[in-house]
Image (tube, rainbow, N blue to C red; front, side, top):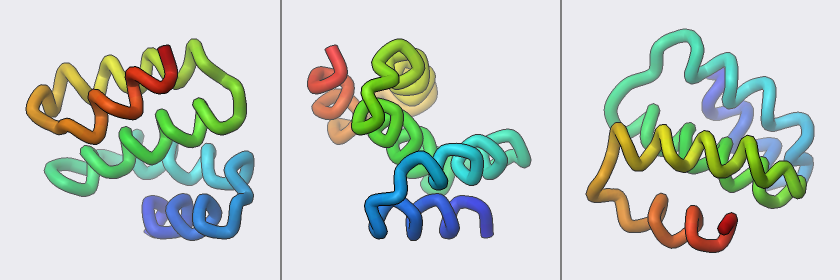
Amino acid sequence: MNYQCAWSYDLLREEEKAVPFYKKAIDLGLDGEDLEGALLGLASTYRTLGRYEESERTFLKGLELFPTNNAVKVFFAMTL
């Protein structure tokens, strides 16, 4: 539920509101594709907000857990 709420705020371009929902969803123990998507969403949202250090840390976590995810690699490059 938190993940979907975060994603909805992102779609509405209300990124600041999305962040706590992404974080809560991740903290509550998402796994698999949902965790992969939430990390990508949170890191990209941080990048959009200009919070580059948080974006970088989140992308690195995503790369550690999902090293074959090309979207994470591309958006991480944009952060750098």
